[in-house]
Every structure is written in C-alpha cells, then in structure tokens.
Amino acid sequence: MKVRFALAVLLVVFVPLTGHAEKKKKPLALEVTAASAGLPLVTLTASDEPLSEVAGRLSAKLGTPIDVSPAARNFPVTIALDQQPLDLTLRELSAQAYVDGILTGGATGKTSILTIYLRSADEAAPPMAELTKSTSETIMFFGNTEDPALDPLAGQLDVTWRNDRLRVFAKKQVLSVVAAKIADVLGIPLELIGDSREMIDVSVTDATVEQAMKALTPSVKLYHRKDLATFRTTPVRLVVQEPSERPTPTP
Image (cartoon, rainbow, N blue to C red; front, side):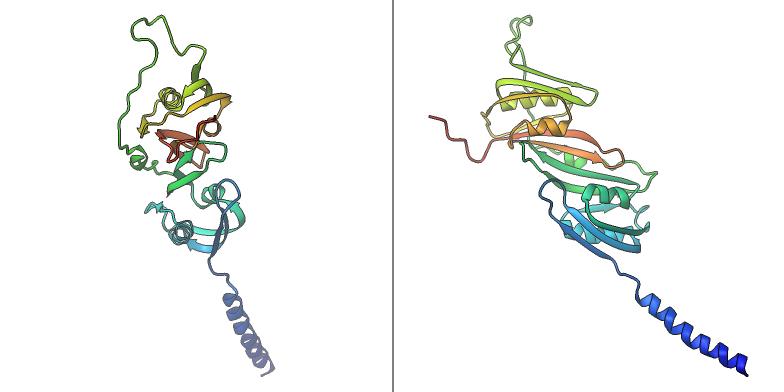
C-alpha cells in the first residue's frame, strides 16, 4: 500500500510539472528596426516554426515581398537572433537566399529591396524578370566615327572591369556618358530617363560595384541581385534619371 501511495504522489507531482514546462515554450517573436546605415536589423526568436510562417512575419515587418519556394516552406526554423543585419538573418534562415534590389549612387546611397527569395539547397536561382524590365532603350556611341585612330575621350574617361573590380576615371564628363561606359564593361543595359546633364569627376580603382556606385551621384541606380550564400552581387541594369531639381549654377 505504501508503494502504491508513493507512486500516486509522484504521478500527481509529475503531471503538473510537465504541463508547466509546455506552457513556457516561447512563441514566435520578431522585430525589425532601421539601422543608421545599411540594411535593417532583425531580432528573432523561433522554435520549430515553419519557414513560411517566419518569412510571412518578416515580410509584413519589412513591407517587402518574400518568395518562399514550395520545397522550403515547411523547413523548421529554430533560432535566436538579436539585432542582426537582414542579410545575415536571411542567410541563417535558408540554404539559398537572394535579394533583388536597387542601389542608389552617392556617398549616402541606400539599397531599396524589391523582392527576397528563399530556396532549398538543391534549387535553381529564381529568374530575374523584374530586374530586367525597362521602359526605354538607349544606344550610345564612343570615340570619333570619322577617324577611329582618334579618341576624343582619351585622358578624360577610362573604365575597366577585371576580376570583379572596377576602375573608373572621369574628368569633367557627362554623368550619362560615364554610366554608359560602366554599363558597357559590365555587359548590362543602360536606361536613360529624362535628360540628365550632370557633370562629374570620378577616380576609383580596384573598387567593387557598390564602392564605384558611391563615387557617382543619386541620379544613378543599379538594379542588382545579391546571392547571400556567396555575398556576390550581380549587376542587372543601370539607370540614369534626370534629377527632380536641377542644381543651382555657381555664380
């Protein structure tokens, strides 16, 4: 009888403790805060939550579409992050993550995110249809068409692209002409919107695409994709748009 009574007491104690432990399981929690520079910061706690659920919450906070493939939707996410940059967060959430965005030129230029893609390890990268859409077609010619031996831009404009690094030298050149040369060496289309007459001086060497963009002006926008598995940026389209307000001439 004493043994049965002891077992009954143990069962009574064990059941409430188990129920109490289950109640302590932390629910999915996510916060996004703006950073002084760069991408937003993410604070995230999740325990065996489907990736689709986490991505849905993150999409709502960012106000940015997040496309999760069917193969990755049910991937369980258990994670605890505190104020981590968005790109590193996405890298931890999915085996393959891609960010399509627009990088604005200038020293304080920022990236506007268009779409985020989350994929499983064995899936192909999504198409770049949205990045390649253009509203105009621009063709620009360089050099002297009458005498190919003469180059009117010699010593004033030089752009090269080697080993994923740019060299851009421009002395008192029209911004659209400089952008056209950059687009040409990158092998991407250039789109002109309006009639930009900005004149610029640029001198950058051994620069990444992002670094070269900082040396330009906010009139230039680079449509690109970043593969977060490798952190490699793929330029897709370059756009030069006439400033909404023309700078006041210096007297």
